[in-house]
Length: 98
Length: 224
Image (tube, rainbow over all chains, first blue to last red; front, side, top):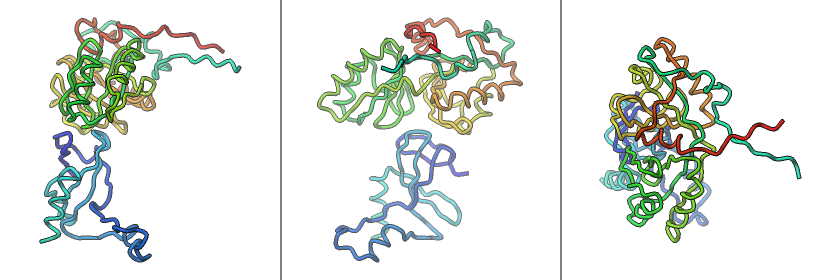
């Protein structure tokens, strides 16, 4: 089982307290009215299926009920870290630029 | 007009705890009893915002707790739940005045106070093996809950706030809808520990037990 650090509670808790909330930082098309059906369909339905480092969201449902960002390796289940959504986004953007 | 007569009863009313209550003895390694019909007020608002924190302190007289802690005083117990939520546990009689005070203090702020007294109840769990019992029920490292700490975690399948005031026992703030399930789970898991529904200790200065003595409105009989 995972042990996930909740940045809001400042505590590392068991996975049982958390709920999985899918891939993190999916960018919404800037102008939905003008997005093509394919773009909008990708935004709504298409998800990465990475084997490797993956940014995902977890909700601390039994604790503070906040959604947090977790970087996890989907192959080894290693967790690189967890952040609040705002803090995690900086790391995520830095990584995706590199 | 239909004959609508609302009445107040504890979520554990069907277990008839007052009739089962026996005096506390050292041989009972796990003891539990309900603190029935207390008042619960949910306070929402960004706690890091000094204006909100000051408004909470002004209305309740309680310091805003830091993460996973609680503070207590005359008005009751203020439990940290999330960066933008606190739970005020108080006597049922205090609820209308506190709610009005909070609403007034929150005027102009992005904050809100809501009465949730119908939604929660509290169970006091004590005895030398009460931590062992908690270990049976949940995955949290319950030894690490020191006085003044709150652990918001899962017991069995239900969420609970585990608050420790002193080494004798913990107060479990649980949902009304899961109270029945949790009580059955506690009594079953505690069977090897000479479980007893024990009389609550004298309130003294205990921030929770004081609130029971502070009173809840008299229970109206159920009209058939």
